[in-house]
Length: 316
Figure 1 (tube, helix red, strand yellow):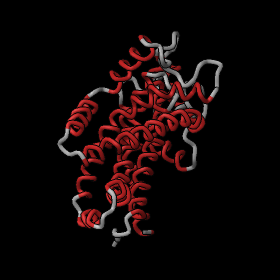
Figure 2 (figure 1 turned 180 degrees about the horizontal axis):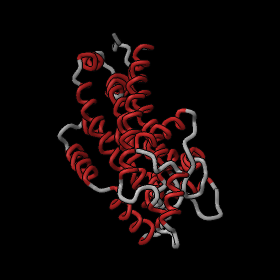
Figure 3 (figure 1 turned 180 degrees about the vertical axis):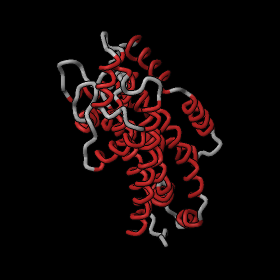
């Protein structure tokens, strides 16, 4: 277990380095560059632009700029935002809670609803419910997140006026119930694709388990159908879903970026888009690296949990 963890840690570090190099190169080679925001200022001369570039180290070759940035990252200095001169980690921390709130709520919806739909499709294979679940999953996987978000806003916020159209809470209100009401629409939209994916994997895993000998033996012993499904089939069918849950983390983070923008949710996804528009490259790189760490950590924990949950697996 320890050797496996160290091996995965080494792989994660290599991936982080590659992500940082590619992200840094793409951002700094994009048209305009970090100085584009200063070039739009009225009365900015060429000499002033050159002085700013020298102060920011942007007149150095790109490998040297990357080396300086990476050196600061290693000592915990993630830089300062161009927009408000605040430390990058401080700004990320102020938006992290909103993103985690949205992701936890959407994950609970996806796991509970996706598991129920998947199990129902497996125990009622080729029934009307199974066909409807399959068609619904295909449609959900095909619907763009931003379009679905706009549709639910129009229906439930504009036409029916049942739920708020956006934001994390009503201005001037910090009540828990108010925040929960604001969370309904964005979490449902973010959970759409995850529910479809989870239900399909759950159905396939459940079909494989219920055909095993130990399930038939449990039925032959006279155990009730519910006990066989819950205590024998479902518990074993959920084991592969641990890995699926880890693989769904990038999808959740990508969907959160669009969902937070549509619903003006003050999380990391919206911060990322705002930083791109402002050419706030230290903030963009900070968000990129922070997200990469979350994804790799999620996959790493999922693998470890799978090893703990299934003692049949032995690492060599």
